[in-house]
Amino acid sequence: MGSYPRVRVEGHGRGVVSQAGGVLLVETVRKTGLDQAISAALGPWRKPRAVHDPGKILLDVALAVALGGDYLADVAMLRAEPGVFGPVASDPTVSRLIDPLAGAGPRALKAIRLARAEVRQHVWRWAGQNAPDKEGEVIVDIDGVLVLAHSEKQDATATWKKTFGHHPLFAFVDHGREGTGEPVASLLRPGNAGSNTAADHIEAARLALAQLPKAYRRGRQTLIRTDSGGGTHEFVNWITARGRWLSYSVGMVITDAIHQAVLKVPASAWTPAVEPDGEIRDGAWVAELTGDCLTGWPKGMRLIVRKERPHPGAQLRITDADGMRITCFAINTKSTPIAQLELRHHQRARAEDRIRAARDTSLRNLPLHATSQNGIWLEIVQIALDLLAWMPMLALTDKTRRWEPRRLRLRLFSAAAQIVTTARRRHLRFTHHWPWTDVITDAAARLEALPNPG
Image (cartoon, rainbow, N blue to C red; front, side):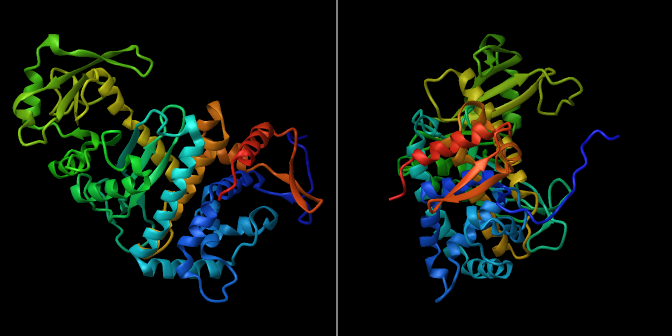
C-alpha cells in the first residue's frame, strides 16, 4: 500500500481553469491601463484587417513569461483559458509580430518604453504608501547580468566568467525592505562587454530616468547606485552634470592612492558600521577619506571606506589592509552620518535579489537568434517583471508584498478555479481548502476597488 491515493487520470474535464490565479495579473493589466497603452504604442505595426492586436499579442507573451513561460510558444497556456485571458493569437502569428518589431529597431523599443513609463507614473500614484517614492526619494540600482547561450546566437561571446552568452546591463528601482523592485532599463550587450564601461552605464541610467515620473528625472531626490563598475570619471561626471544634479553612490576600485590613504586613517577616525535595525555591526568600521584621493573628481564628491573582518575561510586580496577586507564607495550626499551612508550603499545588494527574480522570469536564456529579436524579448521580460512588481504593490499586504516570482507562481498563480457564467457575468470560484485562497480573493478585491483607466 503506497503513501498516496490512487486516482484515474482523464482528459475531458469541463469548467475548471488552470493558472486561474493569473487573473490577478490580468486585472493589474486592465486596471493600470497597460493594455490600452501598449496597444496604442504598437498601433503603427497593426496590419489592415488584422484579427489580433499587436499590443494584446505582446502582453500575452509577457503574461505567459510572468506565469513561468520561457518561450514564445508558452502563450499556449493562455490560449487554453479564453475565459480568463481572452482570445490569444496562434504561435505563427506571435512569431510574425516579433520580426517587424525587431526590424523597426529603436523606434519599436521607444514606443514600448514610453507606454511603460506612462503607466508606471499612474501605478506609483495609486500605490500611495506602497510606492517606491513614498519618502520623496527614488533609488535606481544598475548592475550587469550574465545570460548563458547554449547555441550560436548573434553577439553571444565568451564572458569574463569563462562562460558563453550575453552580458546585458539592467537598472532596477529599489522598493526597500517592504517590497521587491521593478526594472526600468535593460541594455543588451555582447558577452565580452566590460563591467565598467562608462558609455553603457550612462545609456542604462538615461533609459532608467526616462522610465521615472518627470519629477525624478533630475535632482538630488534620485539616487543612482552601482558597484565598482560605475566608479569611472565619465559616469560620475555625467551624473553630476549641470542640469542633471543627481545623487550617486558608486563603488570604487581600490587604487594605490586609496590603499595608502586607508593605512593613514587614525584609529579614532573609524566609526562602527550599523545594521538596518540601527544596531552596531560587529567587526565592521567606516571612515571618510580626504586629500589626493579626490583629485580630478567632481566637486562635492566624498569617499567612504569600509573595513571588515573577513568571513572564516575568505582569502584576503592585495588591496586589503591589516587583515581587514577593504571596500570603498563615492557619494555626493551631505549632512548624513557616514555609517548610514555606508548602510545605504551596502543595501545595493538587493539588486542581486532583483537579478535572481529576473532569472526566474525567463532571463536564464535569450530564446531568439538575432540581437534585435532578443532586444524585444528583454522588453517582454521587463513587462512581465513590471506586472510581478505592480500587482503586489497594489494588491498584496505585509509579508506577501515581498514574495518573489517563484513563490507567487506556486501559491497564487497556479491555483485552479471553477469558471461559472451567471447573469452574463463570469465568476472564478477558487476552492476554499487552497491555503492561499483568501490572499487571492482579497487581492482581487483591492484591484477591483481601483479606478478604471480613463
